Amino acid sequence: MAVNMKGKDLISIADLSLEEIYEIFDVAKSLKRKLYTGEEHHYLKGKTLGMIFSKPSTRTRISFETGIYQLGGYGMYFNQNDLQLGKSENIHDTAKVLSRYLDGIMIRTFSHQDVIDLAKYATIPVINGLTDLLHPCQVLSDLFTILEKRNKLQGLKLAYIGDGNNVAHSLLHGCSKVGMDIVVASPKGYEPKKEIVDNAIEIAKYMGSKVEIINDPFEAVKNADVVYTDVWASMGQEKEAEERRKVFKNYQVNLELIKHAKDDYLFMHCLPAHRGEEVIDEIIDSPNSIVFDEAENRLHVQKAIMVLIM
Ligand code: CP
Ligand code: NVA
Image 1 (cartoon, rainbow, N blue to C red):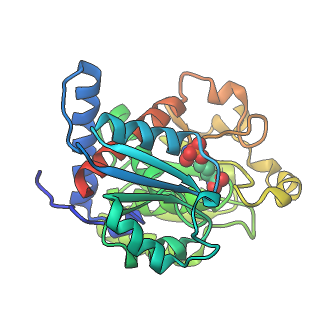
Image 2 (cartoon, rainbow, N blue to C red):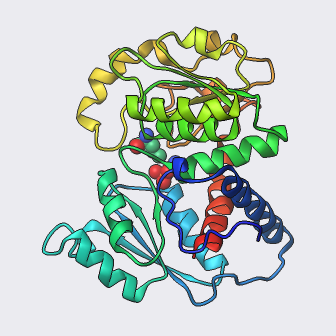
Image 3 (cartoon, helix red, strand yellow):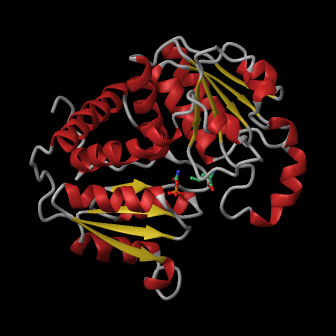
């Protein structure tokens, strides 16, 4: 392996170098091929990954659990009720104790700071499986999927339509790191966080790519190679869902909007999708849609991450 990532945490794409990102893609490609051809390997034989979930999950849980199993290791699932964490034990002590048993921790939770603290006190790698702020494993898998389809990343344009949420934030980091232009179109007041945007603009400068935050979805999709959207109300925002349906109604990815993208545009969504809200069936089920390839690639990319850091 060209780049040594052993012991590293995977908390934000902003923490990764371009070489590390492409190392993850190279290893993912090789692991995907080995899985397809049935080639035996057990890179993480005997290793245990603890998986802490404070929010629900289909893809993240199943891809990590299957992934560690395919690598010869074992995945141990906890929801927050299973642990003393957040009840009678703090993050510091939990991190210290888990580090004595496990070889890696994957955590999905609300507070991004909790993941940073867990990683600070743990002596084993910590992987961010989604926080309110970021979803790095998703976006690394998305970029890998675009690379598979287009054979390049640099110079492509991605338009993200909708809420300036965790997925949008990681896309800002990811696209700027690999030199893709990114335009985010969100309603006023729902734009991505300024600190993330500023960071992405800074990174994009080195790559000669563009970062734009606008309010007009039609302007955003103009000439886009990739059109990406996500739910209007994320996990934890259920009470705002009705209000958000009104605010976001002009941000649906539908036939009218998509006309402005390139003819061979790729449609992406991290899933789960709320069909009829942020996207309509005719788009998500169209030949341009690669949503299930993205979902599959979570498995291969996260296996690569585990192999490299654990
Ligand atoms: N995209 C994603 O992270 O899906 P889950 O919430 O099902 O894990
Ligand atoms: N933004 C969504 C992503 C789900 C994978 C959420 O946080 O609920």
